[in-house]
Length: 421
Image (cartoon, one colour):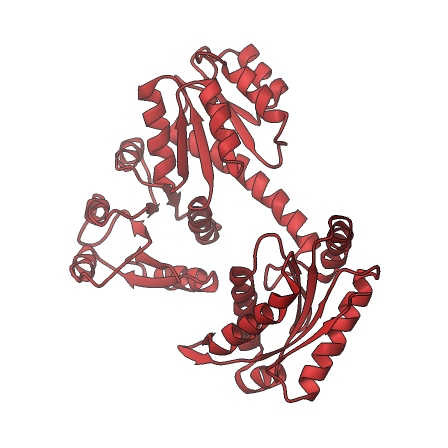
């Protein structure tokens, strides 16, 4: 759980921020003055991920708190009731993430959203294509302040090569005037392989006329910025809008095919994609193993520790299974405490060993249920192997029968059935 430092002299505001961030599953340490912050940070064991700082404190009315927290090199978000032009310029000169005005009734929720963005940004790749070393450095520094993974290119051709090497790039910021391939040509080339909802493009240019902006949009860019006039706030707003759109669309897609609790695929997607996987293994003569997994005595977890502990257990089990299985395997939560695995190209001799290793991994891994408590769980697994001319439904049925046999035989074991015809 990431730790957030909140420095706020108002008791009511501090308590509200603590509540909001704790609801979002962040750990909060709240202090009310510069002196308290100095004492806190003097302890080398104190470790923070980011900070929310009140600009005016009883013992530091001119933003001195920013300079103090800058010494530990963590992202800073300024939370203030007043921001004149001079103060605003001072704040931005400190290379902070952003500032938020207290008089906005939505400010606490916005702060949480901003911190969640920072957390997301750590996994987000941004490519900056810019032939000017100076301007490239300016953009890179802005992006790194928001914790993005940043890649750079000095030409359109180099940017295209990097995009091919990193298919998970979420945003490209490209200048127009570049050697070998200009920004419009790069945008056009990128759009042949990446849709707007998968990768955003922001065009930039020193020419900055309306025709250039229109051309970038027509060639497939999501937005356009003029070099000479953009403000830091404008830059971040445009970047965030582009990425929010991509992640929101992805969330909608995931909601249709993934389980909301564990993040694993749901039953519907399992059979939709699983039937294609099954047909493919028949054609290619690969082997296929289907494992039905069910937690033992899961009801006791809910009855003894509460449903929140049960949810934590299922989420951690999903993570255990995801980390153990390969990307080529299909893993889904079928409902309740039941999960299904389709393992591709595992030799029949190794199938039982694979699922036995999974069973042992579950048994040996402590599950955190909150409040510093851990429990141990076990699972029963039924496995069907083979690649005969039956359906996926039949294979799942065979695996389910073996799961029932494992339960009936004492639980916490693997039962296997070969389905070859």
